[in-house]
Image (tube, rainbow, N blue to C red; front, side, top):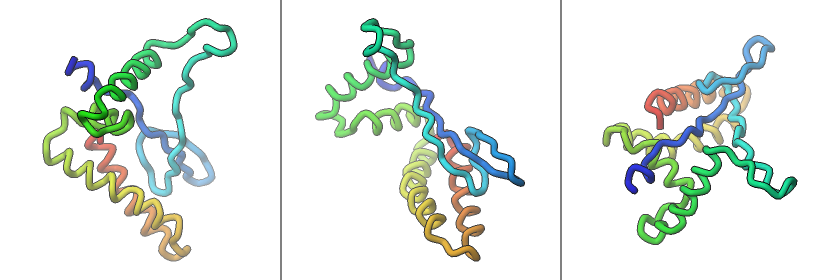
Length: 139
C-alpha cells in the first residue's frame, strides 16, 4: 500500500516562452516564461455512457479516493499528496529547498506582475532562477 501511495505522478509544468517574437512551449523554465495549464482531460463518460478513461486517469481517481480516506490521518488533500509523491525520493535538504521555493515562487510571480518596466527584467530573472532550481531538483 505504501508503494501505491508514494508512486510518482507525471504532472510537470509547461512554460510558454517568447524569444525574438517566436513562441515555444517547454517543460524547462525560461526568462519571462508564462505557466500554461496543461491538465489532461478526464475521459468521455457523459457522451457515450461508457467509461473511456486511460490508465493514468483511473490511477489518479484511485489515488484521489485513497487520499480522501487518509486525509484525517495525514492532514493533506489530494494535491498536497501528489506533491509528497513527487518528492518522496528527494533528500531532506532538497525537500526543504522545495518547500522554500513553494513559498517563494508565488511571491516572485507577483513581483513580476507588479514590477515597473525598468525593474521587470530583474524580477523575471529572479523568477527564472527560482524555477530553474525547482526544475533541477524535481520538486
